[in-house]
Image 1: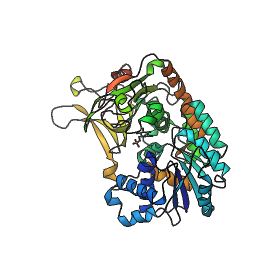
Image 2 (image 1 turned 120 degrees about the vertical axis):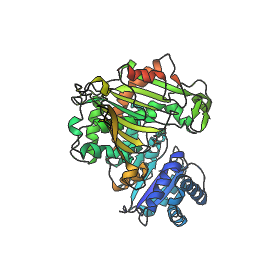
Image 3 (image 1 turned 60 degrees about the vertical axis):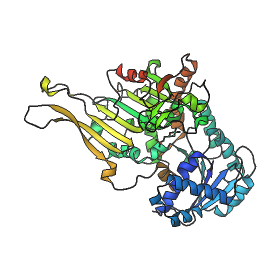
Image 4 (image 1 turned 180 degrees about the vertical axis):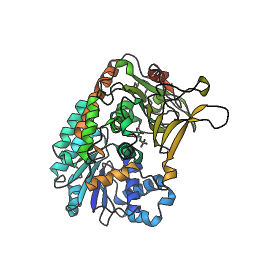
Amino acid sequence: IPVEPFVLVVFGATGDLSRRKLIPAMFQRDAAGQLPEGAEIFGVSRSKLDHAEFVAQAKAAVEEHVPQAERPALLVERFLKRLHYVAADATGDGGWAELAEQLKPFKDRVVVFYLATGPALFGPICERLGRFGLADGDARVVVEKPVGKDGESAHAVNEAISRVFPEDRVYRIDHYLGKETVQNLMALRFANGLFEPLWNAAHIDHVQITVAESLGVEGRAGYYDTAGALRDMVQNHILQLLCLVAMEPPAHLAADAVRDEKLKVLRALQPAQEHSWVRGQYRAGASAGGPVPGYLDELGAPESQTETFVALKAEIGNWRWAGVPFYLRTGKRLAERVSEIVITFRPVPHSVFGEGAGPIQPNRLVIRLQPDEGVKLWLMIKDPGPGGMRLRPVPLDMSFAAAFNARNPDAYERLVLDVVRGNQTLFMRRDEVEAAWAWIDPILEAWSQAPEPPKPYTAGTWGPSAAIALIERDGRTWADGA
Ligand code: BG6
């Protein structure tokens, strides 16, 4: 179903996010017939490009990031006609009058300002959007994560945004919420009667959330070194996943109903304890493609103590979850790219089988977010054959690729159009972001005081051995490749 005509104005239009995600996502929606006549896309950045140069960059982005079979030349041409470019300075007034002038004919459309820039520019850009009369009416602003670098700066950034845009027109993106499989978490929990009665401390032993990447910092070392894994991944993506696993069923899917429930989870997080985290940094090692350098070599700064890996044990202090650890981990240059949530149920209270049957392993529900999206439920099954009762874990295995013969759209395709539709359900509200920082801040504070640097790990492994010890101390193991 096409959305209403809109104007998308992307700040940071020549940057990495725009090239890799936003332009390809908009092309895909256009190709799918969802962009109506009159949907226009403005690129804005400091670079003094002319229209043709910007269009050439956008075309290259589509060619690089959309598979050839999905981009017939005619559709690419049609898409490129929607593009405009204006050079404007986020921290000065240069170019803004021109931008305002160019947007004038579109006053009656939904206008979306997408700030694909660092958080330091959110305030200055919003201030100018206000001053140049661009934030009026129904205009919306989208900001990328991370919002700030700690609670205090996030508060300041949110204040600056709120001086110009009311909360119901602010869309804080966490692209994990736009992933198909992440939305499926809600379907799995709330559209099936099977799991919800068991979804609590009485039946669940622990939860693991892993977002492992095999790539390194890929040309983003400048940004990454100021962030690190805790700010880059845990404060937002991983805590959002934890919220979706742990929240109470909302009454309905309206934005505030869902966000109220997530907020309660964030506020119920117990302060992390010193012995419940491990931070790491990769050294040279190997990936599937061959040898890879260490983080410090990639960065060119031998002193950096930025973590490229973090493992944490989180606990939620409420009736549903008290005593159920949530083990969280994420890192760059790990053994494989895999994001998954593993729910391990409690073991059976008593075995009726003799020793010869083998150990009875607890049931596990594995929600694989990427790649090979799917859901597996591990059950104990009798090994076939007349040789007596031998047990073995076997999965009930649902693969999205096999069940649905459809392309899995990128999260940004869904999320940008949700902004046009005015649907904030999959966006973070201000109080959520600030509550997430309130849990992260003491960890950052402890790290800044800690005399010891992050623990080294070899690229291509599962992180420092201390991360394995973190969970094994509790008599559990990471469910690698479950
Ligand atoms: C981004 C982080 O938010 O998410 C990156 O800044 C990370 O460092 C990326 O690589 C991972 O996203 P995805 O969709 O590839 O899992």
